Length: 393
Image (cartoon, rainbow, N blue to C red; front, side):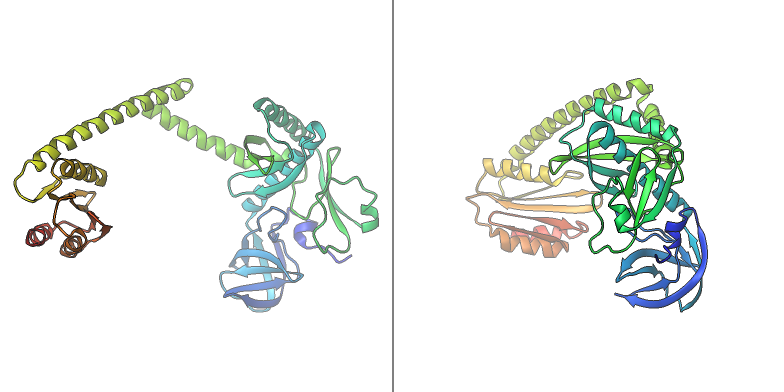
């Protein structure tokens, strides 16, 4: 068989001296094809490796037309190549991917939940299981069973077999890639799993360190199971501890009282918001009575710090009491001017025409149809001019 690339021969290799055989460009992206490579190309649910070639950052690695293309930030010529792998990223992928093999094997052999898909995400990984749902108790049993295999420190090794030998193996596989020909790579976890896989893996299950199940969601009649492994478990725990410490300070409560304390605060906030809405309604009703009682056909008001919804409520209330009037309202929130022009059913004001004149005076963007025109302005410096236009309408 042809010698496999370095990332398959020795996934712990983080640097390599080789040669650039071909340099090209694809849709504006320069790439090189190497004689040998430590860079894993994206595939099988696993993202590609990153790093440098002759100091130039590798931004993507893909299989294309039977070759592995290393896409670079800047072009390189044919010649000697020094490869340096982003080892932290590679080792993280090895932990997640080996964790997936172990999780899949235990889920199927112990619980008869077959894996139908796998995705290695930037923060969280997931597998899809052919089961309609998993209870918290089932997840706990699965996690404990996986933890036992991590502690067992089982060897993980890859080997290649011929198609004839492959037919005699007891392999757990979703099938070979379409168009595959030649020898087949098998990855074994001693006593636990034998699978076809072209990815990178650890040397033994102990290097997984830990695997934590995070939760599930229903998908296509099955269950998507989220997890993290290895360093991601520690980093996630550290982030949770920082957030918990911040919550303790903000809420003034110990860990075991954070949730009920926060729930009580939220209930208080909802009650306050309800009272505030009622107060705003009462204020809008009171202001509407005052505007409706004015003698002029066009009434106006500026209400600093009020939201657009308050202007709309005030306009409706005013015109319900005085349908022969038109109302022009403005507000300014976070240095953003808002305006609203509305006319009652008995008003003679041509709102679309007058609204455009107001928008022009304010340097605003707005629109509307029928009896209401509203918009936003960078400032209300032109308010007096806008009001003069309306009074001349």
